[in-house]
Structure formats: C-alpha cells, structure tokens
Length: 258
Image 1 (cartoon, rainbow, N blue to C red):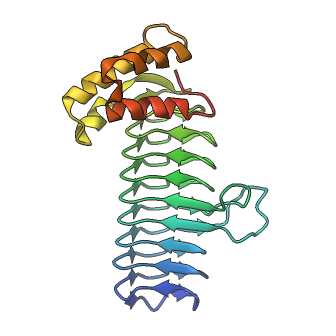
Image 2: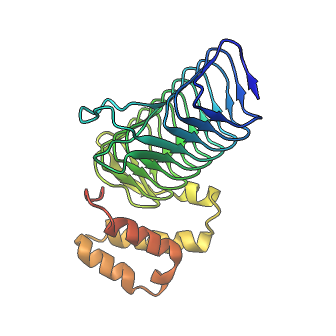
Image 3: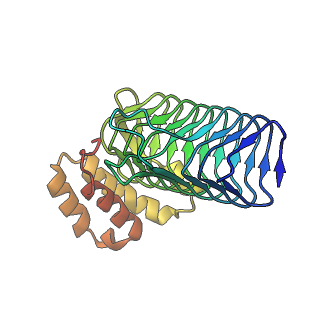
C-alpha cells in the first residue's frame, strides 16, 4: 500500500494492499477501498462507503459526503461504488437517506468529468459519461451507456434509460426512455441515439427496428397507450431492445419526455 505521509486515514478504514493514496487525502470512518484504486491528491472519502477495484479519483473530488437534504439527520447511510470508475476534478457524490433505500449506488466503468454531481439515493449503472458540471438530483436512476452533456441537470426522481443521450445544457424534468436523445432547455426529444447505439455494438438491423418503434411512439400522433399497443403488435416487438424501449416507457412514474 502506498500512502503519502500528508494524508489522513481513519483507523476503521479497510484498504487493500495495492491501493495508492497521494498527498493531502482524507479517508474517513468506515471506508473500504479495494485493489488497484488510486486517490491522486486532495481527495475526501467519507463513509460508510465501499469503493471497488481500479477506480481513480482526481484532486478535490469529495465522495461519500453527507447529503444536504434537510430530512437528513445524521443517520448511517451508505455509498456503494463498483469497479473502474473515473472521478475527475471536483466531482461530488453523496450517500443516501433513510427516507429512500439509505444508499447511493454507482456501477462500473463510469466517467464523471470535472465538477459532475451525483446526489443522494441515486442509482447509476455502467459505462455512462457525465460531462463537465452535469448534475443529477436525489433519487435519480441512470441506466447503462448513457451520456449526460455538460451543464445538464436532471430533476429528482427522474429516470434516464439505457443508451439515452442528453445534450449540453439540457434541463430534464421528466423521464427519458431508453435509446432516446434529448436536448435544449427545457429538454425536448430530438431523435434516437443512433451513434451511441452503434458505438455500443447494437447492429444496424436492430437500430432500424427501433427507428420504426420510435416513429410510432413519437411521430404518428397516437396517444401513448395506443402507441405502445401498436409497437407491441409489430412482428419485431420481441426484439430485446424493443422490449427495453417499451419497458422503460411503461416503468415511468414521472411521465416521459414526448
């Protein structure tokens, strides 16, 4: 284990032998850091927080801090971080609240660019990109392979479905279904995230099928209930990506951007 002499480590922390901790870091009570993770400098990690393998934390990131939610009264809540995430300069991530599930969860291989923010009780999946100064409020769910543009904000309790995309400086106050691209302030739907799907390995045949489903939902003028029924009636509705698209609409509690 490599720990710079200027860093402060709470004796209750559990740190694997090959973790690297640079200068002026503070590791608080009940923090666990697994193999291969690196804290470059001036990082604050507060617990109870579990950090998986091969994560990198850049300077001035503050991870596992108490939420500023006024309901929070100092209860023991947690943050769980998976593997191979990158937290760039000034990123902030808060633990959960007992009013929800008492935990904030971040999956694997996410990139959080400078000054991105993840609030209390959020669930972030895998392979997502949070661009500079993007922020998600409390209780937000972000799926997998999602891109959130710079300066974009997402209202509490919203969902971003798999492979969705939010352009720069968008203000999102309703759910964004899987594969959907939104932009502007307030956010509006501008199409399918075809580029993101191609980069994620989804084949052209499937993307063409999703385009047909998208047009039924968004361009034919049907009410949402009828549009879903029409998508479910097409021959290709059993394609997994189409099911994911429809399921992300049906699971919406705030209503979808449409």
